[in-house]
Image 1 (spheres, helix red, strand yellow):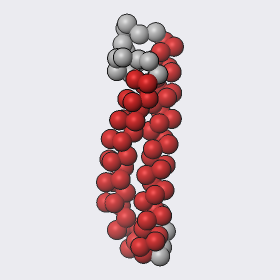
Image 2 (cartoon, rainbow, N blue to C red):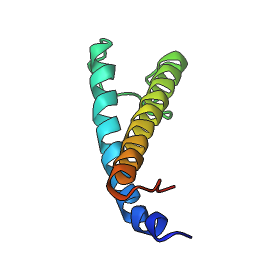
Image 3 (tube, rainbow, N blue to C red):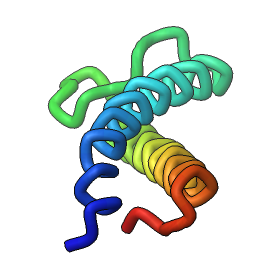
Length: 88
């Protein structure tokens, strides 16, 4: 394994944690802007409909995947610019 890949691991972990936090905040804002005053439902929330739970889960998954891709790709591009090698 290349040294640049090993050196990128802690950076990737930090970016992943940051991305998770950011994705949670973005999802919460989107959920509220869609007209929901409450937090998104949990799958075991008895008072919420199947439809609401599944829509929330699909939206949350899409937001997390998009933010993760944005963060991962941006980090890799930054490493490439700094070191001249692609980290992954």
